[in-house]
Amino acid sequence: MSTSLETAAPDAVAQGLRRVAIDPVSRVEGHGKVTLLLDANHRVQQVRLHIVEFRGFEQFIQGRPYWEVPVMVQRLCGICPVSHHLAASKAFDRVVGALPVTPTADKIRRLMHYGQVMQSHALHFFYLAAPDLLFGFDSEVNRRNIVGVAQAHPDIARKGVLLRKFGQELIRATAGKRVHGSGSVPGGVNKHVSPQDRALLQRDVAQMIAWAQEAVLIAKQLHAQNPALYDSFGSFRSNLLSLVRMDGALDLYDGVLRARDTAGAILFDGASDQDYLGLIEEEVKPWTYMKFPFLKSLGPELGWYRVGPLARLQNCDFIPSPLAERERLDFIAWGRGEPIQATLAYHWARMVEMLHCVEVIQGLLDDPDILGGELIASGPRQRGGVGVIEAPRGTLFHHYEVGDDDLVTMCNLIVATTHNNQAMNEAVRSVAREYLDGRELTEGLLNHIEVAIRAYDPCLSCATHALGRMPLEVTLLGFDGALIDRVLKSHSGEFRHDLGTVPSVSV
Image 1 (tube, helix red, strand yellow):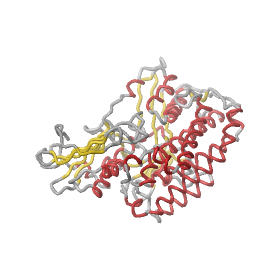
Image 2 (tube, helix red, strand yellow):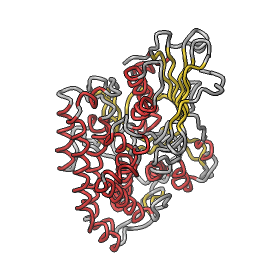
Image 3 (cartoon, rainbow, N blue to C red):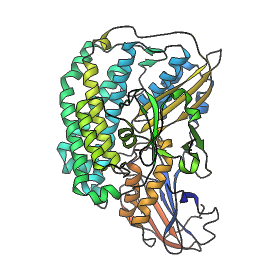
Image 4 (cartoon, rainbow, N blue to C red):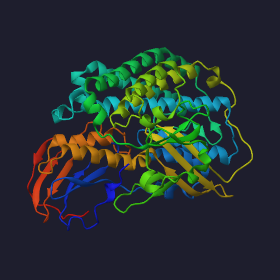
């Protein structure tokens, strides 16, 4: 893995390098900015994905009663609150001594979680990524959004909406509400699934499986139709990290930690999530609020890794549901014996996971335990615990310590987008080096860079940009700070060059 990302000196602009800024990055969750530093030969020397929002959520949690936290942390995210809800609940299961939770609680939580992953994957693929994938990265701006997809491919758009709706109904049936529910509590859950809700969901689940299979086929065909693009776009070697079940199966709710190196060899396996601090360390850099995690055994230069669907499908030994396992084997075969490193392969892997989720949901809906049985477990009290779950975007860590007064004294969260921080920087650099000539900024170029970031489905905060109409500003400066080009994208999607006043440059 190259580490030249940080090779440019802090005073690089003064040394004759030029700076290009993309601010904000659109159709992702939250506000991000990209800067590209060019040398005198118009080559990209440095890339930085800046996360410019600071929320300090860990500080808000400290001092609060521990039983409030599983509900509080859902405010971290507007589209995957269930992942935070369950990761916090799992951590506090240890505090209340619920090891393990009851079979009923485990199955209802899994139903909630797989419904969450399903709806989030549908949202990303059909709403955020589909406009680029179906129309092309250089297609007409006004067409490149979910409305354009609905007009050109109404059947695909309709199925995407209904797949997400089904996942949302699962969350409502298990958590109490579609967003920010309260179904999971330290030690278990607080309600069963009602027979009426189960019957309603069972009625539609077979149709959801069929549509999920069609979504996998769409993703697979995109690769087959243009392998040169899909294999090379934003491609680079990286380590992989995810949870796996004890027998090596894919598991999105619980398991042990496994990591592979850039060649696919296992670095560690069977590691307890409670010992994550012995495996992972976070590095802080002055130009972004997002940290850079790395595997301690390899160090910060070589130890960064990818998480999420691309990592999970290649880190596990098999998927424990028949339809998704067949699709996983097709996916792995695409690599011809080598790890698949292409950034766009995230979309294909994501759809295989969505199919797996629906298969798991179908089995859980048929399980009588979700309608009855013990909801809560308890045991000897502990002072803290770690809860880890595979959120839609990747591995999510919640770590808490609790005082004798039941107030949280320490909180540490590592979210999936943080794990992928360095990988997203690498993806942007790879794309910029291929598509930026260093002389002219075009809307198509900017979208190529955003496509690389969007493939990771990053959640930078809770903003929603589903229509892709956030404003965008990019400035290209010469060695002496003189303006070469500046482009603006308005809320309406209008793209125009503007050679007006240039703000001061900083790196």
